Length: 300
Ligand code: GLU
Image (spheres, rainbow, N blue to C red):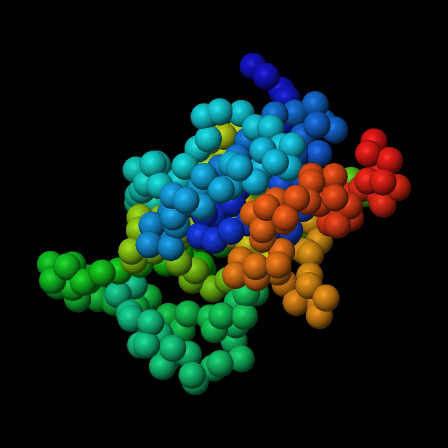
């Protein structure tokens, strides 16, 4: 069995990649090279209404232009819904998920009472609306084909975690910018009863990413700081589903001149427009801070 490290870049094809994605892909690719590991690209396209095929094609063009190489075949999440369902069925059997039929407006109305209680992304915490629906009511709603999400019963999930690991918090190893390991402890309860299976598709970002990283034997997850807090949920799911624990590196986020996060709609930093303007990969490395100006000037 190969013990080579496995790293991945996992973009969502719902817009054009920008400089921040170039940075993210290069950080992962460079670390894979440094570790003598393999590098994968995964297309995270569970959001079938927002993802577009033309963006998938562009992702490959952008990455090739950046000098990034990856192994084929590329995993596409939209082709693996049955795998995610198998994982959620297991969580359901363990009694750790429950159906939530509440609409967006019902939830936001209920959260108005406690708007300051938010998850790490700043979204108001789910107020438990359908947490204790009587079985009969669930059955009636199901026969009426009412759409539902599956939410994690956080208290019970933490009980399960405690039975497995002896603790109600999760831990993981985070490599800092210099590659030094740090021991991190986080509390998944900060997310409340998060959605594990969405209403519209039989998965969620959290479930799909956890299952896929394990399926693809990813040993080092490199991604932006914006997903740092989500790692507690991923570690919780890994522990309960019996999946291996990767090492993490959450890299800094690039910002525009005003200190704002780069967005997929900002044309000036889109990789396609930079590519079409004749910018080359070395200049991109320089712009994102992965190569010095001299390196770019010397072309070495
Ligand atoms: N698909 C996610 C994104 O584009 C990244 C997921 C991850 O790296 O864990 O933001």
